[in-house]
Length: 265
Image (cartoon, rainbow, N blue to C red):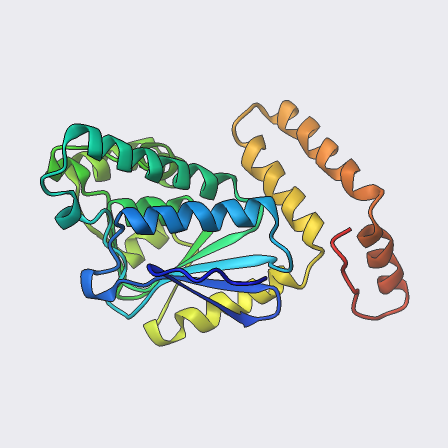
């Protein structure tokens, strides 16, 4: 993939078919300003329209203090109602594109993840966290409420009662608590976080890309309906793979005892 030249996000390809995207404003705890919103919108749009050779994304923050501290309140200070709502509309569209992104996205939470930063990781497919990471949906302390999907994604991750407790109190919580509640998949020492995330991303990227995307889509949409409707969606997704070149290659490689050469076709 030809990497866009962003000013608020840093993009790298640390391995074949893997994109590492980092919030890159460490001086303000990687807070999201309007330009960051534009770049996130552009990135998720590109990966949806044409991911090219990218098969998995890792999303993290620059430095070891913060994944993302949420919306940039210094930029927001003094905004008119119309300006605030226009900015939030941009953020909303970026959050929705992340939720709908066909490429798997792993959040590697390397520090503080508050407000919109916490909502961003909740929009990813799963989460690895550094031991020192801290989380909060802190909006009710600011006279607002979660507006990046947090009331929906947190409740789906940790359950209704826990989500209400965390959102209504705006109480921070630790990586270990997030793991115990099912929001975080694994917790690692800070210096091992990206290594572990990259190893998992490479595992995903080594599998058939169309199969991975169809499986992700089936889980994502199936959980929004009853089990039989979800199963019918799964079968439709499955049948789209039967006629692909990759399905033929996968079976052929298995029988020939070799690594498959996926074409994404």
